[in-house]
Length: 319
Ligand code: AVJ
Image (cartoon, rainbow, N blue to C red; front, side, top):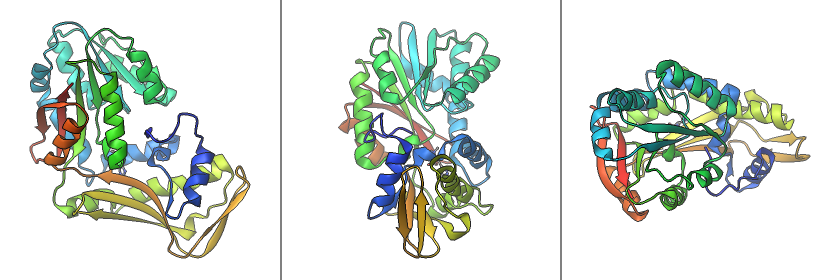
């Protein structure tokens, strides 16, 4: 995921150097998603504990018609999706649109050419008549191209990807989306809702250790791409849900005092015993927080579409 504070030119080694030199060491969760990390994330989405995926699938499958009714576009429009992933959830909604003979073009944006190629093939296999115009790049340079588009737009920011952004970053991102939208354009955003804390904890600290492997892959990635010498056995994974503020924070933990050398940066980093590397924020929202996020950034709420357990919402706003 692209953050608004990271410039488009910052590189992996710059971000790692900055993150490992900070008082609270940190690595952006966008670096989870290399080829192996993306496969591990697919495994996370299949875990029984990871409820967000089936909840959002249910919303888009069962409430697609209601969402479409609220769009109210009277001319052909674009559906612009940020961080489209495998598209299995999105295609439930697109299928409904095609069945209803709605005229639209699907515009997925992703940083990975490989992800976009696979998505295009999958989408066209499932929905042969789909008009699709893919864009490869980061959100904001691609969004520049979109401002040329005359047609109305529906932005999709699904999967609770917004949960990975800190409050200020989430506001900045939504403000930027808003700047590129025309009056009457819509945005559908996936938010994971606050719920029984144990349910959330189990989703982010699963018994099989798949989420741990997802985090530990960052160490392997630094070893491979940056010539670092992290030893997996000297790190552990720790994840914590704070039900007071709705934040899941995930960490790697240094199991001993140790030095790690990163050859591509030509620098050593020392870790105290039990020192943390913060790897991810996954914010869980209340409906009230979602509504102020909308109004603070120039949007008007149309409707929240919740799953039957009220674990998740795809919330539709208009500019
Ligand atoms: C894909 C970013 C929404 O925060 O729930 C899953 C990633 N991290 N388990 C999330 C994730 C740990 C996920 N997002």
